[in-house]
Each structure stands twice: as C-alpha cells, then as structure tokens.
Length: 349
Ligand SMILES: [Zn+2]
Image (tube, rainbow, N blue to C red; front, side):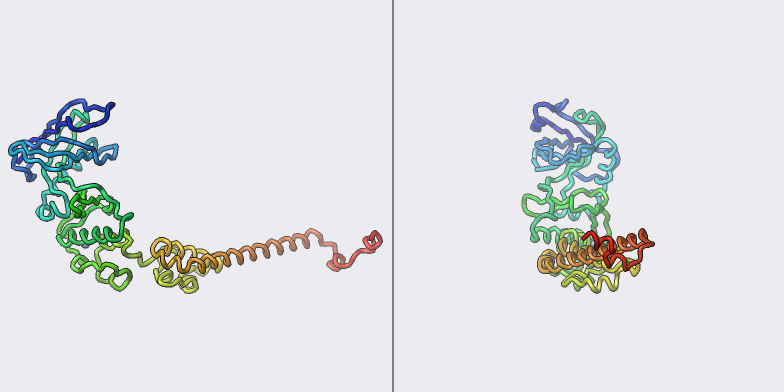
C-alpha cells in the first residue's frame, strides 16, 4: 500500500504569472485502512495540464503517475479538493473501495490508484487528493450524435446491471470518452450499490422511440437518461398547470381533444385553445422536430386564427363599450334625432 504521494510541479506550466510557490507537495495516506492502491511505498505524480477547475474547491490535473518502486508510469488524473469540499474526497475514495465498484473499475469507471490528504503549499491549505486513471476528455452527450448517445445509454445500462447507480442526477455532466473509445462515468460521490435494476435486465432497443417498450423500463434513472439523451421523448407535457399525455401532440396534434378533455371549464375557450396550441408546438419542437415541421404551418395558422378571433372579440367589446358610453352621455336626445337631420342642419346645407 502506498503511504505517500509526492506531487512534483516541474512539468506543469501554470503560466508566467502563477508559478507554484513550491516545486513539490507531499501528502500521506489517511490513518484509516481500506484503500487499496499500488503496492508501492511511494507514488509520484507529475501534473502536466489542469483539465478541470470549478474555481472554488476542485481542480483536476492530468499527468504522469510513477510508482516509486518499479518506475512504471501511468497516464493518470489527480483530483484535488480544498476548502470545505475536502471531506467529499474521503467519501468518494470510500466508494471506489466498495467491492461492487472495484469490479467495474477500468471499464465503466476510472481505476482508483489511491487517496491522500495533507497540507499543500501550492494551495496554501489542507487538501484531499484522489489519484485515478485518466479516462479522457469530458463529453457532452446531449449535444452529440445519436450513435454516441446510444453508447452512453448502453454503458449506463451495464453499470446498472452491475448493481451500481450513479448518484448524481446530472450524471450526463460526468461522462468522459477514453482515448480507446469507451464511455466512462466519473464522480462517484453519491453512488449507490446493490441497485436491483428492473430495466437493465432488458437490452436497450435502439430506434425504439415510443411508448410500447416503456413498460420494460422501470428504472427512473434509465428513463431519465433516455429522455435527457433525446433517445426517448417524454410521455407527457405540461399544459393548463398539469401534465397531459403526449398523445395530444404526437403522432398528430389533437388540439380539439386536448381542450375538450383537459382545459379547466372556467377559462374562455379561445384562451384554452391558445395555451393548448402553444404547448403542443413547444413539445413537438423540442421532442419531435420532424412532426413539428410537418404540422408547423397548420399550427401557426391555428394560432393566427385564434388571435384574429380574439382581436374580433376585443373590437366588438370596444365598439359596444363606446356605444354604451355614447348612449349614457346623451340621455335626453331621442334616438331618432341622430338619424334624421335637424331642421337647423338642413338650413345650413
Ligand atoms: Zn437501474
């Protein structure tokens, strides 16, 4: 077990104005046991580039890890936590040591090389450091090709099959692509094991876009992932302050049914139509762009018709209000007088 980590900053270029105050930092393995790592007295890490920084409490460096004993070198990452976040490092390291997690290391999650704590002169504070396998650049699957999005989903299924559930719902921010092509999930802070996943037992069905296959998928994280990756579309959307079935929008917009079945009875019909139409358009634009294109003209025309009718109603109201006002301000004038010219007028003409 490595008991010590030395970070040597000589290869790290911080730029001319921020040279580290020291050329090396030495950290120790915490007293408590349970952290397997290299069977080496000393690990040496040479940071080369900083690959992530939240500017507050976490920096991640890519660099070269060297085992003091056998001089073997590895492409590794050093995750430094400082300030109040320091304690999270310990929790994450403990997660890496769970047997279920160890099984998937080096495949679906990074290999864990060790955990160390101590005062770092470079940071001028106490820190905690995880040494991990470098697993490539962070990717943003939501913006990527369908092929990659499916690969991310398949890998997440694999993780669930192993009983591991990624703890952060924003897990799509913690996806990396290894130089060898595999998709790897990072940040194991809130991970849970013994997840008996009902969905992962069924293979993913690429291209299976809509409701029928959903019954197979009962795991909320996988469903969430399918929706967020835009592989599946949500089965409902928000309208009239509640969730309505996506059947009202797809495969064909059904505005009439939506208004009839879902709109509260106390709102004016045109208002209900307008809200429904806008909600259908928003849903289709976001989740079914092809269908949106197909029905765009029809939906836009519907909106225009609604607006026209609303204008008509407003105009009618204004007219009747004016008329009422005119009548109420001239109570003594009989109605007929306005219709026939007065003798005075005739005279003038
Ligand atoms: Zn699951």
